[in-house]
View: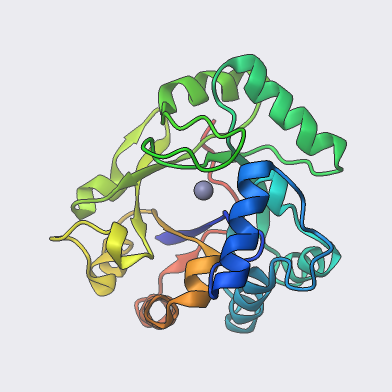
Length: 239
Ligand SMILES: [Zn+2]
């Protein structure tokens, strides 16, 4: 079976030093594009180069303030990655649809999306914090989009397999501090992929800032190869 590598692109400038951390936060809180900044998506580009070298395809989800620039698009294409919307303003169906239109107006089109944030914090000017997957499934159906991957934290391998209407509720998080305290070993995660498809979720700013995360991703890739586990290249038939 296979692993789907999901990447939510949250930070326009990353957070690896104080300057870019503040820049990212201001961009999020004021909803200002920093696309022309020389370090724009630098952390993501590093991650893309790494994945491209390893020949691992992934699914990248962008916010309006982290839309890919030309260099990022080239790297996405070089690695045959997929990309979609990382939704923020999920207050109502209308705000959701408006946000999709805003993406489209900027020439960014997709047919799948993920949700930004897991319910607790307001993370951006137009971010609506509650996490309400059932609502998003309904909206996805209305607009002919696919919402297949939730933000839950897997507490055991069965959680990774848990599906409601073809929606994967949980993922194994790359960030160690978001993993369940009793289910946190990367090899256990990869082993779960022997019998069923599973989802790995991470963020490029953390990949770039935290060496341990990059090491875990590297280990996951080697383990997957040794166990003959493939990488999902297309969204499974989930609608
Ligand atoms: Zn996010």
